[in-house]
Length: 214
Image 1: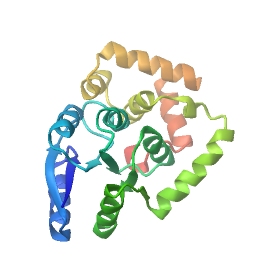
Image 2: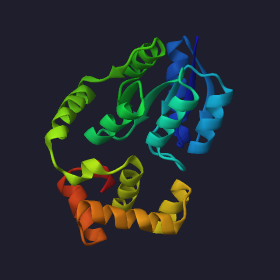
Image 3: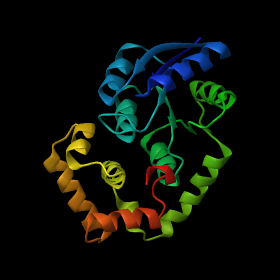
Image 4: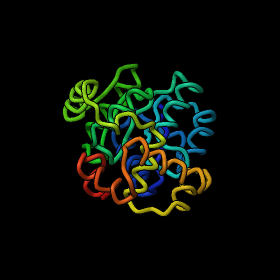
């Protein structure tokens, strides 16, 4: 049996994943986390081999969690299962230490195959995601300023584009509103943009986030 931990803040999603793994056989769900803090604690306690990790949960960003898990639990295999199909997320997840990347639209059979592969020590990426990774190689030759943003800056940017107020962003990331305001000013400085409206226009023009998020 492959011990699997599920990290997703949506109960319906967790129920669906449990059902898929139960029907497939050979898997045991040994823990479920609904936010960043719970992910780290459960990873220490439940002895999972694979964690199915959503990138967008309350608390610490998924990319930060990947890095922390790799430090604390180097044997734990991380399979990202997220709604984000954008190239930048795929690249950043693998750079952080993920072993696989799937979108939530993936078929159940693909999910089962991916878990088995990463549990055995391999990596998994769908053909579509592989193309995005290949495209990312061209980024090294581009001068787009958003490529220089940190993972936390990109997460604050995403939430700003979604229209979340500073206080809500602060609560979601477990930081102060003043810290979020500092990130916002840093974003405008790095992207050389004069306002929050300009930040939104830039995100749309460069297709930084999914169409459903803007």
